[in-house]
Image (cartoon, rainbow, N blue to C red; front, side, top):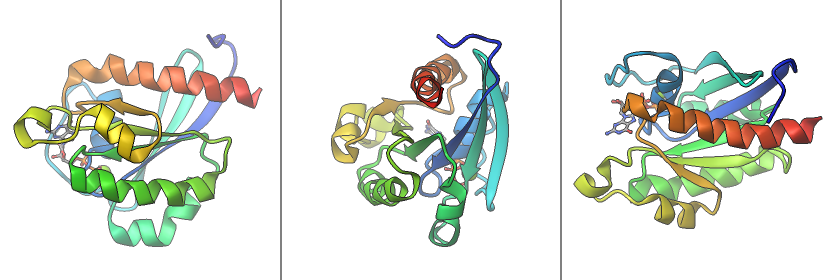
Length: 172
Ligand SMILES: Nc1nc2c(ncn2[C@@H]2O[C@H](COP(=O)(O)OP(=O)(O)OP(=O)(O)O)[C@@H](O)[C@H]2O)c(=O)[nH]1
Ligand SMILES: [Mg+2]
């Protein structure tokens, strides 16, 4: 566990194709009520969240092709952790695999790339993939999430906490 008097600042980058739930994940961390209206992120958004003495700057990058093609490298440089978000539909999971390969080349081996299999509420309803299947396709550590459900906030914080503890220990 990290001592609270250490001023740890980490850059966490959220990437993924449009409408997979990146901005909703940011809302889950910082808003009391989660607005479900889809407003595509233009460029990027940035929020600072703090727990356990770790200050996380969370960068939420718009998933539209124009942003990914032109700015992904600039955006990802300096990341301490990348969260690749998928909506768990098979089409999106398969196209996300390529995004992981691109990110991997940009950030290097000291920056973990973790996947979020979001929209797990749609597994039964719409035939979306289970966490296990998403992890099998993406071949990176994968956590399931329902970002529109405020009760999942603790789960998300625990995911970030356990992954970031490893990052901060390594940075020391
Ligand atoms: N059913 C379901 N819908 C979700 C979930 N998470 C997000 N959504 C919805 O998916 C839509 C898109 O969410 P956003 O968070 O705006 O998507 P984004 O990845 O930021 O999209 P861009 O900014 O275009 O890259 C919104 O209508 C959300 O309410 C989830 O876990 N389950
Ligand atoms: Mg967004």
